[in-house]
Length: 99
Image (cartoon, rainbow, N blue to C red; front, side, top):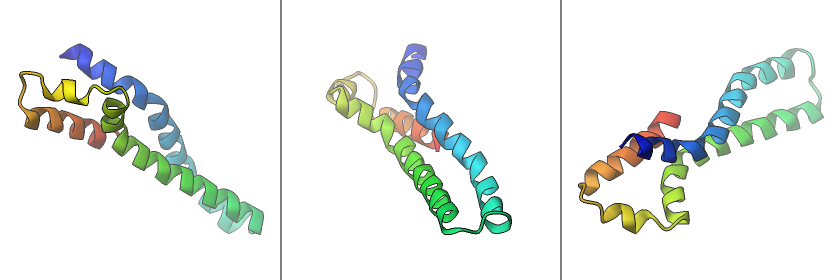
């Protein structure tokens, strides 16, 4: 069971760290937009940062299921001698952990 966790967590590392860095930088960008740089170009930069941040959150929410569909392991996962509710609870737990 321990190996299952590491295999499912490995593809989520990069999107998690990118989203975390953007979550920490977003208030800083908002302060700079309000106080120092008040131009239209800086507003576009802030909008792009916000878009990437929210796309990262949605990516983290869907990746645990998407990886199983991409590698076609979802039917194999459902044919295991575990209950389906525990499998879905594990996948949802991964999504909630990273979001």
